[in-house]
Every structure is written in structure tokens, then in C-alpha cells.
Length: 190
Image 1 (cartoon, rainbow, N blue to C red):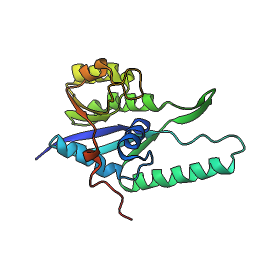
Image 2 (cartoon, rainbow, N blue to C red):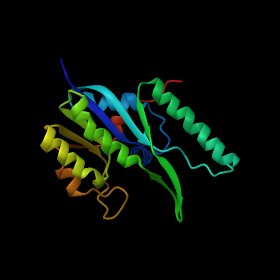
Image 3 (tube, one colour):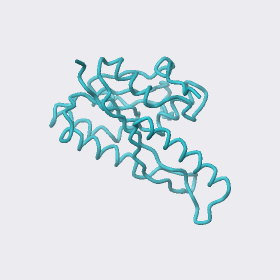
Image 4 (cartoon, rainbow, N blue to C red):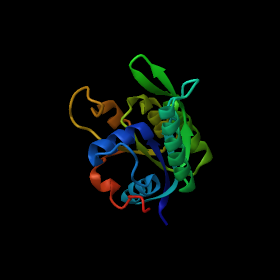
């Protein structure tokens, strides 16, 4: 019997990686299958998949474009839920230079901290490139003995959105660079 794992996916990060590797930022792939592929590669059984995101920004008087984006988002989230993916939502905030997700990293951190208490899982898989998670990863490794497998993408260009911090890499037990092959067999069948 395979050891069980839980897969935690930073949705915004994975969308950027998919856009870079597949040419599209829209998940045209089945996130559940993607997560199961990662677990299988590690010889683990995927018990749960958590996906962290934020709905698109909606102004007080939503425009037609905002309503269309929200409608597409709702269909996407409903499809994930039907596949058994647990979607955790922050919020989207307008800033001077665009939009930012808020609360998403906090939700992921809370779930990582609560997981060792509520689950009998000894290894987790995390898909992210965010060094903000280093303290929580160090905590669950030292206090709860949980092993962390990090799936990431790096382009080896300093200060790019895909530059990878050694600090994050050192906070994990195993590191795997995400490649096109991780998406194979995950296409949606219409």
C-alpha cells in the first residue's frame, strides 16, 4: 500500500508555469490528474488536492467584461469541485499597477499548519515558487516530521518571476523541476 500525500497548489504560480511551458495560462488540463501524476511520480497516493486562487476582481458596478471573467472563473472552480479538488479562495484587489491576490498565501499556510494535526500524512507535495512559505515548511518538517516535496519551475534568470530562491529549495526534502511531461495525460476530455 502506498503512503498517502496531500497536494497543495499555488494556482496563480501554476498558471504562470503552464503558460510558459504549454503556451496557455488557462488550465486546459485536469488539475486533479496533474496532482495525481505528481504523487505517482513520488510513489505516493494522492488523498486530497488543494488549489489556492482568488476570483477575478469585480467593481461595485461590474462591467460586462468583469461579469464574463467571473462567469468563466465560476465554471472553472465548479469543474475543479466536481473532480474533488478543494478550492480555497482569497480575494482580488485592485492596485495602482493592476490587480493582486490577497489572503491566498495565508490560506495555504493555515492548511499546511493544520494538516499534520488532522491527517496522518507524512509527506506533502507543494507546487509553488514563493519563499513566503519557508517558515511554515520549516515548522511542519521540524515539529511534525512531515516531508515536503517541492515542484517548481526556474528559468535561472535573476529577478524574473521564475527565479528560484535557494532558501525555498533548502526548506524542502525533495525538489522537482516541473516540465511539460508533468502535464501529459492531463488534458480535459470534452
